[in-house]
Length: 392
Ligand code: SAH
Image (cartoon, helix red, strand yellow):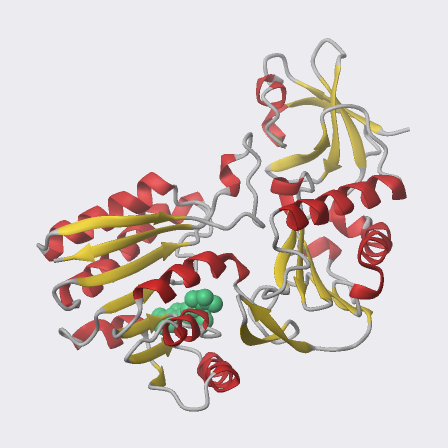
């Protein structure tokens, strides 16, 4: 028997609109024995069953798995994960000739709130964001093995920094199949080394795949600055596109090492140099040196409370770049902060443009690729926003 969570009168509206979160303030009463991570049934104030989800003490109290009464037996996990893979096959991302790196499960976007799984050339990296998903790891792993069969040689659980503190155990990071800590992946025919044990997030920023490809198209004969380069994804694509020169900058020494390694994997000799430097300092005086600048900073706002400072940060950063691009130059600018909406990001870049006092046109409006789907009922899932600007 699942525990029962009953909502206050009128607090069922968002569930009826299939939004997958129930906030703690919406709950009228719940069974006393419900523990973190338990599967619960959610009822409206008149005792109508609305949904099934994982309970967890906190602002988001229930993460919804289905809008009916569902049991999360092995068959449930098998079906959800098989469905996620089927979608990636349909998108020609999974089992594709030139690419063997993609996001298999994108949390709410794949009706599995709290679960991220990235696939790197035969290795799955799991990131658990909720106690409910943590408690079901023993079902998720067989489901993964079942859908991939021999196409899966490694599984690594990388959840130490994403699980709530009460579930941090020696089980929150570790190998669940094989023991490889890195591999070389192919993305659009280009090679990248991905190390999930040492790298940021699950090891690679898969979400920029299509945006990197677009940069490749713009890069012929250009001098390119890839700011916040990390593994150098944008740098490799710019060189592939025929850039005259590429400079990669990151404040982390490991990132500088990684970008050099990835350039060497793809090109015998190249017009590339990487620098360990702070973005704001580097951008201080680069007047007219670059035709294209990419700004892909880490999330400036992790939550709503720091939104104002984050928007100011985006404005300052973009202004510095816009002031110094060569006439006729192009800026690729991104925000991956979930708390920053598309409109707010655009407003910051508009303010930066006005301060830079240059004529600027929007060429492209970018977001996350189709292996990072967004539930239409959960706009919060659309976290990556980008603009490509032509600067006269
Ligand atoms: N563009 C990358 C992902 C960027 S992640 C890709 O396509 O893979 C953000 C990067 O910004 C991290 O590598 C981090 O080390 C770097 N970073 C954070 N603060 C910085 C700063 N002040 N100056 C330069 N780099 C910074």
